[in-house]
Amino acid sequence: MSPSSTQKKAPQSDTPTYAHYAAEDFVQGAGVAIFHIASERVVVCSAMDRRVGKYYFLPKGRRDAGEDTRAGAEREGFEESGYRNRVLPLPTLHHQPQAHPRLTAPPMTAEPIWIQLMPLARHTKQYLLFWYIAETLPPDVEPLLETPSNEPYKQPPAYPAGLTLKERVAMEPEGYEPLHHEGTGVDEEEQTYESHLVTVEEAIRLLGGTDDVMADVVRRGWEGIQQRQSMEQEGRDVPDQFESPEALAEAKRDTTLASVGGS
Image (cartoon, rainbow, N blue to C red; front, side):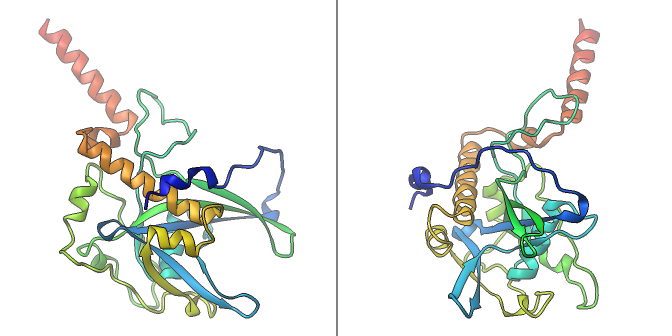
């Protein structure tokens, strides 16, 4: 399947608008599509509803106080699906400015790819939900994050700068299945959730088809992974793409001084 073939049916952004919400009237949350890149599969959760029966969704939830949305997406992904994960930098289009001094625009970012605004608490609160793309963790990282059941969740290390997706896949033995943890839900409802590693095509179908935002999160995520793989295969070095603008400025300054000194 080529997820890009569904582009014409993908959901569209709504018209920008003005709205105002005091702190006590909004809630921020984050969700995540967790990919196992080696097997080209993605994690989808399911639950039972007495009105509609079994339904499928991507893990999501409110961020904790003091937690940024990316970390919240990773934590919610683990709690609701049982799969540890980390946000994956991809060549995602966005309009966020680069850190000063703005000498370059690194093509790999870990920015959200969708945001949804939904009413919450009987339409008395505004919910702002950010969607991210993540990957399952390599087997050597999993043991570093184990904690007793009575201790807080431990955030995984960020995706390493300069690590290509090919190198990342090579860190797993052939046929490796990402570790699934039981009992990670933090309340009675989450404890009933089931999770499934399915193909991209199956995930899009289970999530409601190509006109659903969650399905489009999966589609965009997989296209971003494929695009990054193509960039790396074409020889566009990832290490430079991950350098901060400050590091690039320092390198440029050193090069200029060396050039002046040698003249």
